[in-house]
Image (cartoon, rainbow, N blue to C red):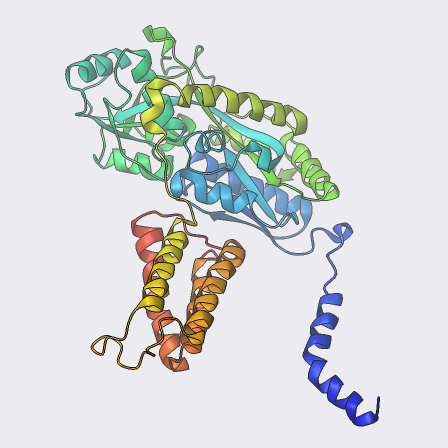
Length: 458
């Protein structure tokens, strides 16, 4: 091969060589250096509830133990699907930790997601709080019996909230109704993203009842703004001895909500062991922040803790999943197990619509009013190329949306398609800026379709 040919070959293939050099330099991070950058904890429920407060305390102590910033992101929506999916489907590198709750063992029974406890590496359970029923301070109800008698005479007139529809607190209230010989929907459930906003809604008179744990309502309860009719345990809680139990009121019904820390499946074992070791030190009281241990912080917040680590936590997850599965698949709760929408429902709808439109265009005969410049051929080479590009865009969305988020992924794909189809670049950018955030606001914020939020949270 002469010098000119060698030069031409090098120039022709230099982009490929450059890519190979870049990929060769992208060696995976060594677990020995972990952690060397900030860590994110994904909390599936909103600010103010027990899960949020637990997540933030864990972040404070882990930051001290691991020596890097630890941030909490509240990924709410989709009845808990959004937060659990984002936490457990994250890259298994130890830089995203998932706070999991009882809903993880409920969502797949309700056909809301395929995610189960088997998709998590359990680290330790943290809070285990019994459900309780709260009313506003001026409510006419002073006991569970009074409430039960009223519901029997007036089914469907009261409203309640506490979490998303079909969540653990919804299940607790509906279970009590079923136990009492009533229908599970005799009290209308109003979906909310956690106990914090639910209790504010109760205090403002927006709902009649709230079902959540006592610690979550501690501030409003102690200030006298809300009253607790009963807690779903057999024995009074040590922190709230004056609150009557359901059993003391002749109702043998009990259920509790829990949360814990987990890592995505396939996280390297050395990283799992490092996080587990740090959490055991934290929950045992060895770690101290501002002259307080983690158990002391949790006790001061009124949160009932139950620390199950590693294999014990894994065993609990399995048994809890079986228990909730039997309850949710029973006849009494089938109406709570309707199929919901997942993060990929919207792109799937777009894919079907796009394919339908492209097929129509491919077989469309020339109609001057609609497409004066369309070729008389029913199928053109450019049409085939455009179809392939759209399908590649859909595949790219499926591959990158969970990592980059809906706005970045959909925006990039839409811009490239518009530009490739002949739209001026500035007009393509303008359409993307106006269209994509609007779609995200409509579906993710207003309709509560849990679109992927990605690394940046949107």
